[in-house]
Structures are given as C-alpha cells and as structure tokens.
Image (cartoon, rainbow, N blue to C red):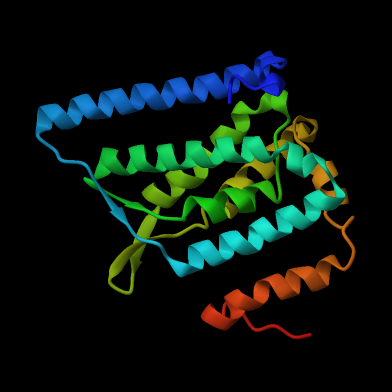
Length: 215
C-alpha cells in the first residue's frame, strides 16, 4: 500500500503505514526468536463464527450503501484494508505473545468495519487510526473475565477504543484531526437509511435475537 500514488503523495500517511509495518515486523521477529529459544510451537486454529461474518456483511453493506452517496467512503477503502491487515497481525502477535494458539476467523472484520462507521483519522494523522485499532484488540485480549465457565473479553473491541479516543478528542478540542463531522453529516445522505439499517439487521435478529425491535 505504501506504493500507491495517494500514499506516495502524502508523506505523513506513508510514514504511518511504513511505521506500522516496521513495528509488526520487529514484533514478529522478536516473537519468533523467543519461541525458538523456549521451544514453543505457535499454532493457528481456524474457527469461522457465524456472528462474525454476518455482522461483517451487515456493516459492509452499510459502508457500500453510504459510499454510493458519499464517494469518500470508496476512496477510504484501501485504508480500511490496511486496518484489517494491521488488526489481524496485531491480534495474532499479541495472542502468541501470551499463549501458543491463535484463533483465526472473521473476528477482525466487524471490529474494523464498526470503527470505520464512526471515526476516521485524516491521512496526516493516520497513525492514530492504528493506535485506535491496537487499543481495541489489546483491551479484548487483556481485559477479560470468567463468563459461564470461560474467559471472555469485557469490552466491545470497537466501542471501547471509540469511546476513549472520542473523549480524548473532545477534551483536547482536536476533532479536526478526524473526519468525524463529515461522517456524522453524510451517513444520512442515502435515502431511507433507517429502513436500510433495519432490513440489514434482520438476519442477525433471526439467527441470534440480539435485541427486541419494533417497527
């Protein structure tokens, strides 16, 4: 992605992407050395959970519909892709730093899509987007409790970092670092947005009964 013209023409964005790659590569190298010296065998378990890919499909549909009426969403797509790659790598490395098995699935998709429905940092500040994602996955891994006999994360990995960063932006008066105002004002450019959101949410309601809803 650092070779794209839009990245090459923005040195701050290039540095954010290159810096994220450098950090992940260094972490990966250190982890491999540590695993080799300690005799650990790092493994990947593939588990495709329905709630993850259904949620991702719903959120992706909202992004596509929104983007049809505000083209900036489509222009942002490659940076959503960058966040997805970062999320998978960060989550995997953090998990392997604590235990041997990583569960690979669609989990990062709804987290990243959810974050990008609410907050984008402008290209000059894009490293903050990576920090936002990192905070969400760190909280998911590190802040946990026993629920029905198993360890589970307490905070939603998208809403928790969004809350923290939003409060920080409001307190410091630096919402200009983000596309927050534009996101809030353009998400209802598409006609009948509430109806679309309701219809998109029906599969999740059918399979999981997330919450009671009325027409």
